[in-house]
Length: 70
View 1: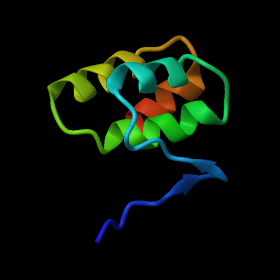
View 2: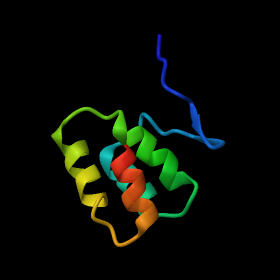
View 3: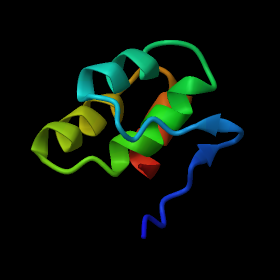
View 4: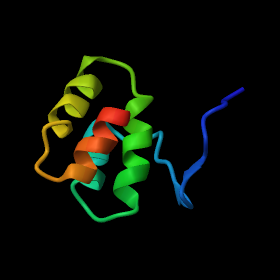
């Protein structure tokens, strides 16, 4: 049974989205970007981790925090 949350602050978490789709959402507007971080953190593999590391050095402090928390 999948125990992951289905929404993040009222926005559906796009678990089935590709890495490119998640990056596009994160680079887009809120609140979709925060739900995309939730999906990205559950994505396996080094590409997802590398993507999170990239966002951890963002000039936007909110994006940095979301990446680090993820």
